[in-house]
Length: 125
Image 1 (cartoon, rainbow, N blue to C red):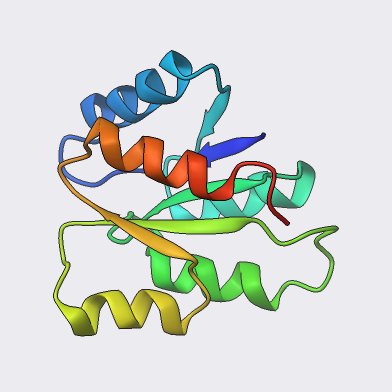
Image 2 (cartoon, rainbow, N blue to C red; image 1 turned 135 degrees about the vertical axis):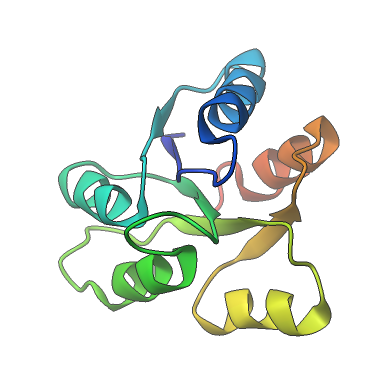
């Protein structure tokens, strides 16, 4: 399963490394995009099965990046997209789902949530 991690705002480097290490611990390889625009460039050159998309990335936020991905007819396949957000009010979650995200996890990132997502989307089309 090819996985990309969108930039995580705030203490980005530390939080990216935590997510990256969680994925490595479970045997996955992941690429890291430093902002939404970089994530779009990455998926145009490589197929990803799963994207962990931060909602508050610099340059382009997660909502805008997800809309662009979902509208991109040139992609060979559409990845599963999981929001990573500190905003978990029902209306925030619904905004993520409305633009085509498949699920969300709340920050701070927890191991059990990463496992839940990986289990949920592993080998599913």
